[in-house]
Amino acid sequence: MLKELFIGLSQNQLLNTAAKKYGLKLGAQTVVAGTNLPEAIQTIRELNAHGISATIDNLGEFVFERDEAVMAKEQILDVVRAIHENGVDAHISLKPSQLGLDIDREFCYENLREIVAAASEHDIFINIDMEDHARLQPSFDLLDELHKEYDNVGTVIQAYFYRAEEDVRAYKDFRLRLVKGAYKEPAEYAYIDKAEIDRNYIELIEYHLLNGKFTSIATHDDKIIDHVKQFVEEHNISRDKFEFQMLYGFRRDLQLQLASEGYNFTTYVPFGNDWFGYFMRRLAERPQNLNLVAKQVFTP
Ligand code: FDA
Image (cartoon, rainbow, N blue to C red):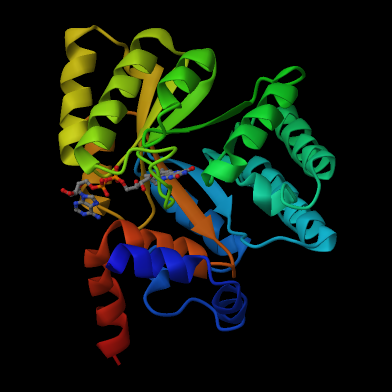
């Protein structure tokens, strides 16, 4: 019930737009690293000091106007420059919808290409985050086209999709982030049952660890993390072939512990005014995060 409620709220355009005006509220500041780029860079410096890399997401949702997509592109180009100029250990995560996928595919491609080209000059990796089912194939198509010219680009495979196994095989030569999947998808396209998602997730991870280029295992789930640790040990998979990833503000102790155990680790660092949808999806995944909200609301 709560999951449905928060996913519904994340998709509410009015609330998303309204929230932009008020800065980080409701406890969002515990999972969003500020509203501006200097704040995000400061967070990344702190992570880097602990041996943790970062992937930066300049938050953006509901982009239906060309000028909004162009603004998002300019902001992400600023992030590229900031990573380079500050010499921080970081790459970028972005969403095709933020760059105009829902407006015009070619326009989105040109925006994306400009970013990937600028990032490639400084050897900065660009991850195309995956959104809901409607945007899945169009996002893979964008990736295919970009990959003809650039190799500093990769994407995400969401284990809840039935097609994920086929995708992980097709994209084995890419750097891939493997996740369970965050959107509400119909049974027509995706596993609904948690156990089935977890089973598929483990199969995808094992396949890509054995056959793929570089694997980012993005989860907060101890069972999955322990399984990966054991699997790489048993199969002699070198630590430079994979990393763990978690979201900023989640399981900080475990993030530090994995980094101190010598695993490559990347924290996903979202920042910006457009925090509402991102925050609601996090609450949908784990309503216990409501504690975050409650603490903020009741703390003077
Ligand atoms: P899940 O929520 O299934 O929890 C499993 C178990 O882990 C819990 O029962 C609990 O034991 C433990 N656990 C989880 N969170 C915990 C916490 N905060 N504290 C203590 N224990 C906890 N999705 C998508 O669709 N597209 C994308 O591009 C991305 N990108 C992305 C990047 C990164 C870096 C991450 C970490 C995640 C994503 N996701 C995503 C989100 C992903 O699909 C998924 O929705 C969330 O990671 C939640 O699933 P988990 O695997 O973390 O565990």
